[in-house]
Image (cartoon, rainbow, N blue to C red; front, side, top):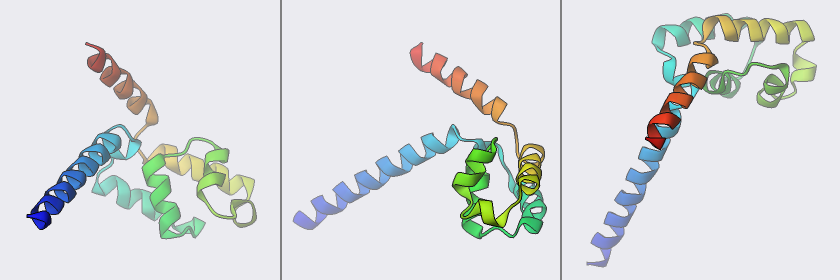
Length: 115
């Protein structure tokens, strides 16, 4: 009996975590991306020689400032010049769906929650 209770508690915890993760990701910029957008973006990132983890962070967060880039890319000051950071920001804004649409979606979701 103890084994079944523990399994049910673990399943309930997993369901909660899955639900919360999905709700969180629905509000993030990565929600608007598809396979084609991601492939195009990754191809455009090749000249920057970023790690897989750095590319994933850029995809998930869609940074819009040099400060955000510095937080996501290890040793960015040594690895990238200011011009390269600006080029990277241009690639991000041109290849990934806009954050503006996410901001309006967040506002609409908040209004629906209040209703």
